[in-house]
Image (cartoon, rainbow, N blue to C red):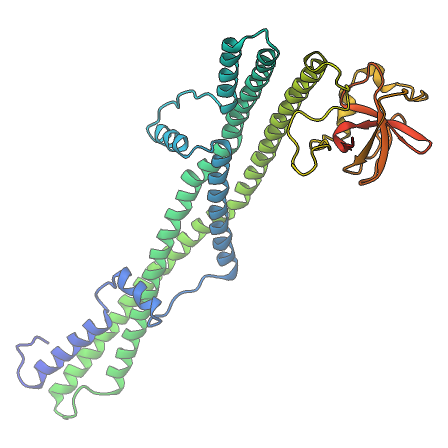
Length: 412
């Protein structure tokens, strides 16, 4: 059936070829073209089952939130954006990040140098040295926290994004290609069958000469071959799609294991952060005690234990009122010397040194030696010789007991 046949024969050959080109029975559909047709709603699309779609949505959500948590944790550990960029470049170049002093360590260095120049034996110089030592310990604790958090938390998150997620994305793209091939084969078979049915039921020519019937039968046989070929291609495409869908499904179900791993890393991050803040609290409490014990020598005549905090008042409208710091909780009592916990409170208040105090926060007594407090109530407080400066004796009616200074606003 070449085009060299005269008369109607040439028309038959041209008509069949045109139809073959129109349905693409022997030519593959470009994936980009088919994907565009799907987006415009002009081509059918093989839909994945609901479970598979849920796995895809959960994987995308895991990836997006992991990226956000990773980035914000990096900001928490290293607020300086320039330093973060430098660390990123060193990491990409597979080189060791140079050691960098923390802000606390740098502050400690400046304070120590200032004390050396201004006079280490003066009250100001001595205090600078004490605060510098505390800041140095805080800086070392911060360094340990950053190192531990980077290894136990940031590294697993990066490994997921740069390892597992890249593998999942690669297999998903491959599944997308297999689906486009499958949909193209389905459409090709559908059009080939429609053309075959039309060639079988409607003759190509209205003339009744035997030669035309022979040509029509040849066209029908050609369409039959094209249908067989399209069916074979469809079976191959379906097999490849099913195999790739199973591989992708297994990877997506592995997101559950990723969540378990990230949960463990999150617990380790909280533990390291708790350790860091506990160390900071202990260092600052030691510093507070050191400054409190030397306060009487620096400022003679000061009422020990009931003095205003070192930090300035939060409000300038009440200069006669001392503003307490944030409460540190009942755990402070556990840091007092053992002998003080068994302090007998059946004592008479001193003739002088009692003051009124307003309670800032509710406080639940840890034992019988302490006095429970309610916010906004007024009590009488005073100090006893040898008491921890962080505690006072409080009286309310016929009840008395130890109360933490940080829960009180001392009134003049």
